[in-house]
Image (cartoon, rainbow, N blue to C red; front, top):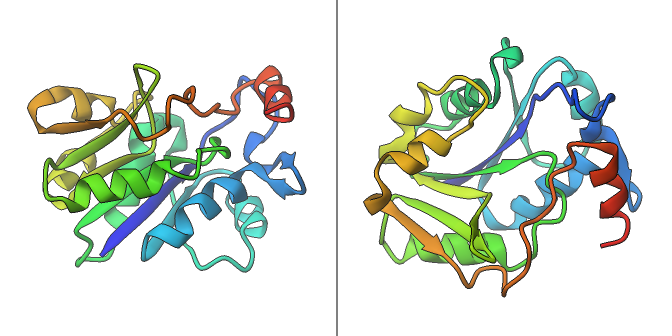
Length: 194
């Protein structure tokens, strides 16, 4: 089974309010991010933090599970570790996505999963116009490293630790720019013109 982990436990300090709940074309930002994954994976774990109940409400009716990060202040790495711990024992890989990245182009997730399915490397990353981005696929063999993460760098240290085990999918976004994270009011405004 391939699962998705959506990171939705951040504090949104640069936004000044909970960015995941902001409306984008009639839906909360986090709902867009989750709906991008649902058709492509068999299980989705949404990692929440201090806004757990509001994020759950934003995802009402979707077939997802929730895991609460008790220490979201420790950064994205701690949320990844919580997500990994919540995966079912038979999960063979996970695709980790950001809850504040609502407009991942449609071809990205299928292309990453296809690359992983060809049996190549245990980590598969998208490359957008030369820049490595998210979401990222991790095979089960990498889960122990992910479960030890802390801090705000997310899984970057795991991806960069041994480049020979990383497959870079460059054609994935058909030469599109990296999907925008909603970190600031300016980012949110830009989403409305994309």
